Length: 255
Image (tube, rainbow, N blue to C red; front, side, top):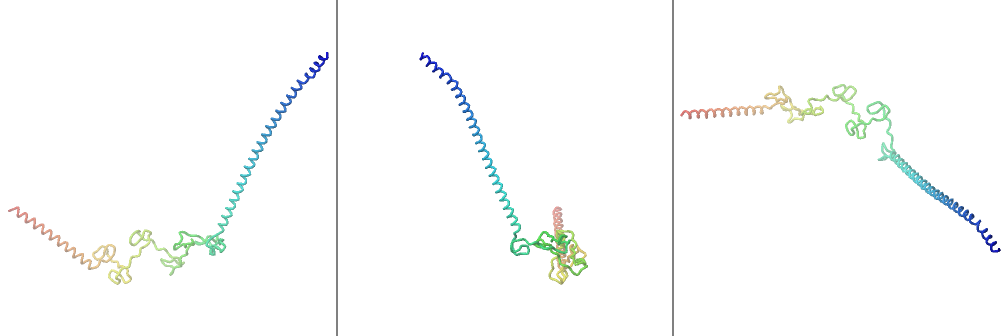
């Protein structure tokens, strides 16, 4: 009897432990799942935090780069401005001794060929010529005299001579400017006056005056006449010789 009682007690103690063990097992699984989710969440949070940090560092680097670029541009702009303000050589009419450009003074009277209506000097081109100096300033031609003549108007302005024609000849260049004839020598002769200017003759194209209006010297004429006569005599002698030869041949044939 006692053994049976002990058996029942043992069974009674053993029966409730099985469901409890299952409950504990289920609870452990839930805890494991929960811890896994929390771990995944933490990993994701860390990953996100890492990405956010990398993004922030990248943005910071880009901002610093942009700031550095802006700083360089400002420095360049400052240098360019300083360069624009500096001139050389210094201590001149257009550049002071500190290297700062000196503004040219206003000109007067205004609204002229050398000064515009705002009082600014009018530059000319090409430079370094008779009418334009090497700084681009127009050179005002000097007044001429006497006035009111074919070469000088009544206000003292030179009148340009008319262009000659035909151009590109011995007496007229290709721009229509007359070419001065060379001086002749000896002077004070029949063909050259006492100023060294050739004496023209007329009518032209004759034995004593060529087609350009230049006198032909008598000696040259005489020499030309003598040469012409000698040529004529030679032709006559040649003709006579040919006739004599022909006559002799005819007589020889008759014999």
